[in-house]
Image (cartoon, rainbow, N blue to C red; front, side, top):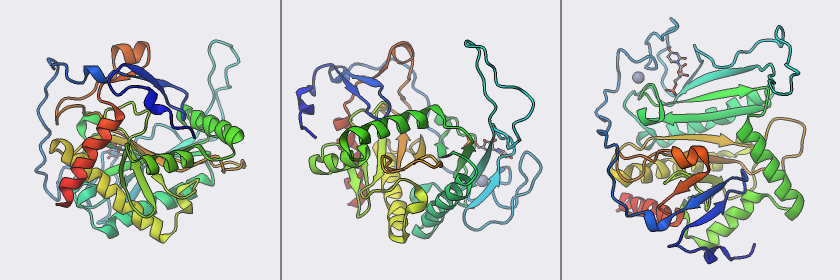
Length: 348
Ligand code: H2U
Ligand code: ZN
């Protein structure tokens, strides 16, 4: 890989390409110091009880749908009471053949995964054993659901700012019999890169970023976290295995333990940045579950946090982003450096 990225200046406006999606991002480093006159909301309260009698995810409580949670002790997975996609046979509506108004029938399942029985905890608070249970649940669910569905989307919305309905630590899993657009795009791009270069795109990224270190946030024996060169959100990160792996269920014991550890380090970096339990949406991408070869694919997790300059001032993806393309002020290199500082403070 040639090393000519520095030809784009750290101070002048430029445009970067996201090779995973083919979309671009405008970077405007000269604007990072402009004054802020917009929304300043209040920080979210963080003093939560370990058990909330009104929480529909706490052990022993009744959910909105009427089912009762067991007195669970570690992770707990249940079928979403309000699934967005249903597990039904493809009957009824015929696919539309009109060139302008096309639709297709879909089937899938939606699950909710409680990360801990403790209402007040977030990932950094959990024990390594509890983290490992979350990682194992993700690996097991993706393997099981992958037998029936082509795509298994594991994700977490954290914080009210990201539309999370409940502070109880939890994530979701949606499995579908179709490839969603993000998955399809990453699949196309990684296969095209492999066809041209004979190597997995994101393994090349891992190697480059480990040598260069500028966008490296943290790493351990098996995993690395970078702010991608093409990051869209101010403090967006990409979590990747340092070894070749296409899917979660391929991970061995040590790799799973190290994954739990690096996720705790990363979420601590985030929390340290503005002194607040950092909101984000995160999710896993791995090779689709079909008959095709998986060599082009490298497993990874995206973290998309909305915060920009304080616990309350967020990045809005509005005007130019909606009408034209993504734009950011703080550079990905500056963001990585800020996140590393949080990590160093955390270790003192
Ligand atoms: P968030 O991760 O966005 O907070 O969503 C929580 C999910 O929990 C949401 O998809 C489900 C909602 O449908 N849920 C239940 O399945 N049962 C309930 O009793 C409440 C919420
Ligand atoms: Zn709860």
